Amino acid sequence: MITPRQTLAATQKSTIKDHLMRGETISKWESYERYQITCLAQRVHELRRAGVQIKGKSVTKNGKRFELYWIEEKDRV
Image (cartoon, rainbow, N blue to C red; front, top):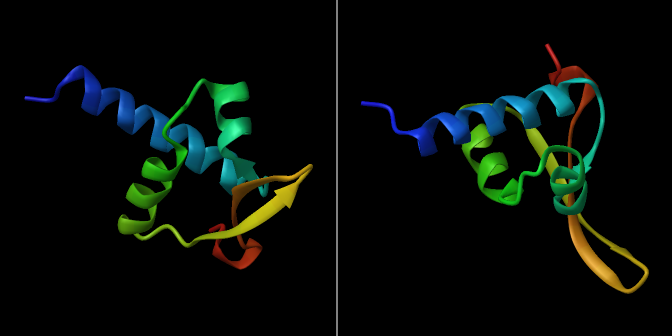
């Protein structure tokens, strides 16, 4: 039986994947601001385990450090 939590996670993964497949980058703050997704790192981990080639790097801006994720153009098929 699929639980509501599993359904929510699947929807969030789909939302994040669609965002990245459009060639956009995403950070934790942006995922919360745009989609109300608070567990971006977990969803990225799950997508990577499913074979999605997501790149990431630490970025420092205004003294704050965060992870920025994207999919290279060649991997957006």
